[in-house]
Image (cartoon, rainbow, N blue to C red):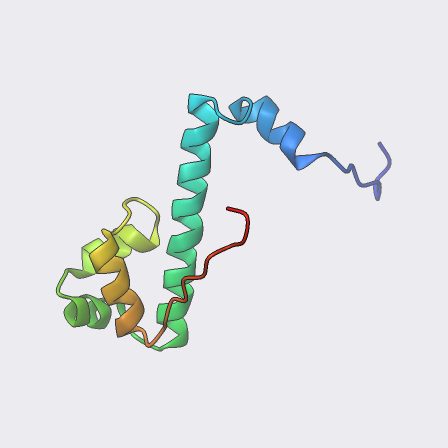
Length: 102
């Protein structure tokens, strides 16, 4: 391959090769971890945008700084109740909509 050549791969094919086909235990585990990481990054960015420290956020929602850190690092997922408290404490909102045909 030459210096500036780019290889384009089908991402679904890559995931199949690395984690197995959709529906396999390994692929499902990977997808759950990916979603947890994504949600953690959204909360981390929202906290930074709100200029709130982990300690301040923890105090607002009744938990510890280390627990907030674990959430932001994707180590643990907050309960639904804590997730909504975090969203509220950061001045965000969640809109739940129904998709047609689902």
